[in-house]
Image 1 (cartoon, rainbow, N blue to C red):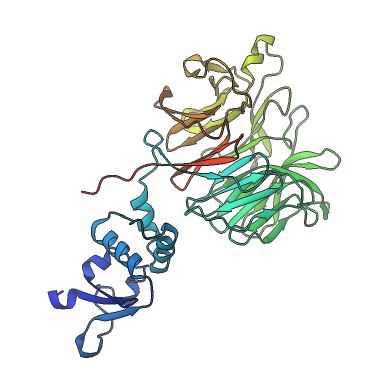
Image 2 (image 1 turned 30 degrees about the vertical axis):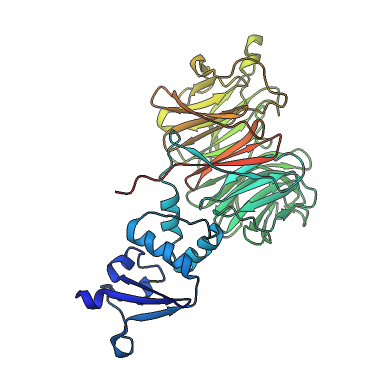
Length: 444
């Protein structure tokens, strides 16, 4: 392209800006600017008198910031420009992904920095937090779910009319799935799909048996890459099992009833294992006096692996399993006890013993007034474990402690979640959640 044709002039809210088609090409084909050009990034139409000037009735201060972002890859927001206004302008121009990339880099647990803390919007302690795929999150407080987008702007809350929320899952950035008691506050059924932006109920998932719709309580949730939803279910007559629904149609497609001696429907945690096409089902202490874990193969309708601490010596009480997560690459299930000891169970041996790792015991001394049970997460090959008011990061084949995330305000961490290149930690005492982000790489 010639130099003269490459220059583009914009009049934004009465302010004149000049740039080049080369700079605007950094915005990408799907952006506002991409629509102005042909496939070769030449202007699709000539302005009168060959003046390449386009008028845009938007905020000129934000336009200047976003134009500099396209030029340099760096994001600088002056104090006189509200961040939320800039984000909304970036959404208009189709530059949200550019802003996100400039604000934080690819997720790395060893480089996380505390970005912000948000005070809870509801009375009482928060019970669960779930990171959204786009960097937002939702927080459960009893029967309420508060949804935040990636700029941490709160959307209308979801109210289940005094029915306690048991679990939450993000189907996509526009929809959240909530499991609760049998009425969902809005009719029979214990699981519903809600709009993340409006809080409206979009779909109610039913359990059907003998061509009859059954009332049930839904518990733990999980999803598979082929758009299946898994939920632990409990019927009114204490029938337990795992229900399966098609995420696209909402129809029930399968149901796995518990085997004698194994608690499935009251499960605390479900995890889909893509490599083995199985579902990990875990019922943990203190919901039950004993811990049960199993792998269910829905293709063959059988339990292919199981483990329980039934019959273990009394000295194992201090090793009660509080959370569990399967690690397929290691052929093991990682478990954690109330002292943050990590344990590993071999997935290739049904009923095998736990190999406890005492080197991971980090918390010593006096326990806090309101201790929270530890939680586990696995992300990008890094293992995370919460304990009291901090989160530990483990890396490498031997899961060596490499860093810890901690802040003093808010009390113990009752839940945490990773998604959208962020880690969200929910504190119990002050109903506060923290947002941890990886700083962006330096601009060269």
